[in-house]
Each structure stands twice: as structure tokens, then as C-alpha cells.
Length: 454
Image (cartoon, rainbow, N blue to C red; front, side):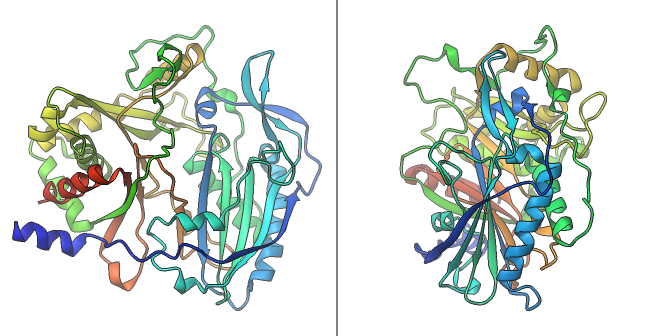
């Protein structure tokens, strides 16, 4: 017991004292429009896009750069947004329902994206550990709902907040229907290139018909990872993306390279080593902790979901520059008894099998399923990895971000993987894991997290 306590102390991250008020003042809100006239048209949204019709909020922090004070950055950023909206014209549009097709689509009407200029009374180094989930980061992003006029919901709002030290943050709110993680990274690369008066780094591919359902739809596989909402009784909680109003504890768990390598060694007992990736062993570890943090029932079945990029899985493959959502949820499922007592290597194999299952035919089957049913991904927990998306590698004229993170949200069934906040104190940390759970479940999750690592 003593060794476990010592182990937890060496790699756990204590809850820091969080500044609740960032003392942010909004100076100006406006709309940004494409710098050239764009074609008025409707953009088809795939069945994957329409499921992800909710906002994603990220904050990108930058240290002071004497050549680029916040005022100059504000001007350059606004001009780059105007220019990028020529090539990403859908981002200046609005989501609407096409009642003839009964589908959501984007009306590319050039109504613009929101732009907010703000300042904080703090210095950047007074904000504390940027990797720790802090509800107060909400003050660095702006809501899209009723942005400047009631009923108007832009697909993107950008807020630049300057700090007393000359550093600043860029908070971006986008509808997930517009981008997945990979295409958002490409968008940021292009925004950064235009801000530096360079051409686009990647020519985006906007043809979302590439992920349209087949006609007629052909569902060739069972899809337990999806649930038809029309089959559920009213009042039943559903949807992995549903935000809870219950009070949750937030915690960041950290894994070092040594922790991850130890998990890989455990998994190699019966596995082909090609399947023993860092992502697979981490996902399996989190699956066990999440499922067993609830009251134990050996016969209860637990399903884990995790996003798989299908660009390379399709035949022919999608271009890497595809701008829509090209991710589907793979799954693994077993009883809690096996999660508690079974071989870790066997559980890792189940997770690996979920990714291998995602062939062209399987992906098309899920998309066709979405054409036939009103459904959402269905599981006990979704592991969403921002670990290697590379937002922190985007090179703007004023430098790379010091750190990028999402704004905390109350979703107890989604676990987020993030790169570490690089500082001298946590140089050996490889991964930050953000978890939000009710207090009793968090206590159990934390105990399992460390005991399963030994």
C-alpha cells in the first residue's frame, strides 16, 4: 500500500488553485467577411457531419513577441481571417435545414464569422498551469449563439485576448460540423500562412459528397456502436455527447513515456506487437478504469468508443486535405468481469480489432446506417485523442503557441487525451488525460488508474 501511495504521489497532478475570474474586458465585437466575393451555394453535409452539430472551443496561448504586440497581431489575424474565408467560404455561412431533402446543410451566404477583441488584467504566467482544465477559460472564447443579433449563429467566432505581459490568447469556437481535428489543424496552418503573407500551405478539399451515403443505402454489418434515438423512450438519457448538469470533479492524469512503455510490455504477452501501440494500450487502460469506477456488476457489458480517421481506410482514399469530418467511432465491448479479471493483452487486442474492423465497406455501412436512422454513437465512454493533432506546432508569424487546449465541458462519458504542457517541471510527461466524473466515481477511477499501472 505504501508503494502505491508513493507511486501516485510521483505522477499525479494535484488540483491547483484556479483563478476563477480572468478579469477579461471585451473591447470590440464585429463580423469578418471574405476579402473577395464568394459563390453563393449550399454545401452538402455528410451523415458524420450532421451528428457533430455542436460547438468546439479551443484556446491557443502565445508568449509576448516584441515584434508582434497584440495590436499588430489583431490586425494581421483579422486580415488573415478575411483572406482564409475566400478558400473556406462555408465557414462564413450558416447551417440550415433543407426541407426538400430534410437534411442539414451549410448555406454559403458570406454572412461572416465573429471577431472579438478583449484584454485581461493578468499576465500569462499568472494563469497557472495551462494544461489544467479550468472553467474560467470560457472567458477567452465567445459563444456563437446570438453573436451580434438574436437568432444569428456564426459557424466560427475568434477572440483575441491580450495579457498585461504582451502575451495573448486566440480563442476559437467552431461548429464541429465544419471540421474534424485533422482538418481544423490544416485550417490553422492555412490561417498562419496567410497571416505571414504566404500562400495556403494546403489546398483544402471541400467535396463532402465523397462521404455521401450510397443509393440505395446498404448496411452490411451490425452496428452496436450506434443507437437509433427513435427507438428510445422519451426522457431516457442518451448520446455520448450529451452535456450533464450534474456537478463533476475534473482531474488531469499524466502518463510518462515509462508508464506507456510499461503498458506496452504488459500487452505483448499474447499480442502481435504491431497492435501494441501507445494509443491502444492507453485506451484500454482508460476503458478498464472508467467501466470499473461504477458500482461493480460482473455481468454488465461495457463498450468503449474511439475515433478512427477513415481518410486512408477508404477505397479510393480520401485526400488528407478533406475538410469535413472523416472520423468514425470504432468500438470494443466486453463484460466488466473480463475488464477486471481478464488479461490486459487480450483487452488491448479487442481495442486493436476495433480499428482493423474499419475497412472501406464497414465505414460505408455506418454512413448508410446514418441515412436510414436518427442515431448517435452509443457506448459507455469515448476516448477522444488530441494527443498528436499538432495544434501547438502551427507556426504563426508571431511564433508557435505556448499551449493549446479545449475549454472544459461537462461530459462524463468523454475522456480527452492531450499533449503535455512543456515546462521544466514535467519534462518527462508524455500525455495529459482529462477526466470529468461525479466525485465518488472519480475517487474510484483515480485508484484504479494508478493500481493498474503497477
